Image 1 (cartoon, rainbow, N blue to C red):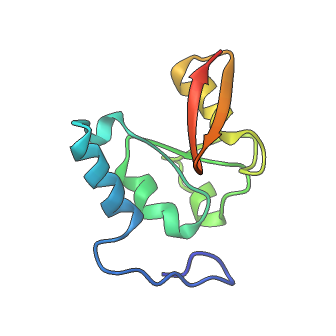
Image 2: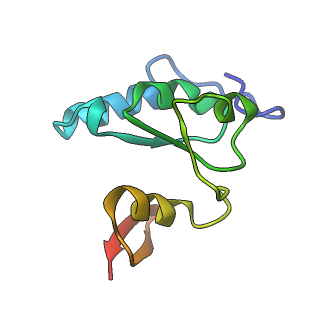
Length: 109
């Protein structure tokens, strides 16, 4: 799969972002109607189409920016993107991002 102009991703069948997300949704007992996906490039497009709340940063690819079903933020993925999403979707005014073992979790302050 071509993920950027310079990058080609090679993944084993069944190991796509969509497959992993759907497995996680099932494991958590959720539905696609309660999911938020964030993507910035064409390799995220299928994932964004499959979730209920697709979100893209301001520097997303043209294909993603042109899709009217994807909510576009006014900040890039180089800024506080996760913080902004938490503020919009979870009505959190103050959010602290905590990086723990390469996982980012949101905690209210």
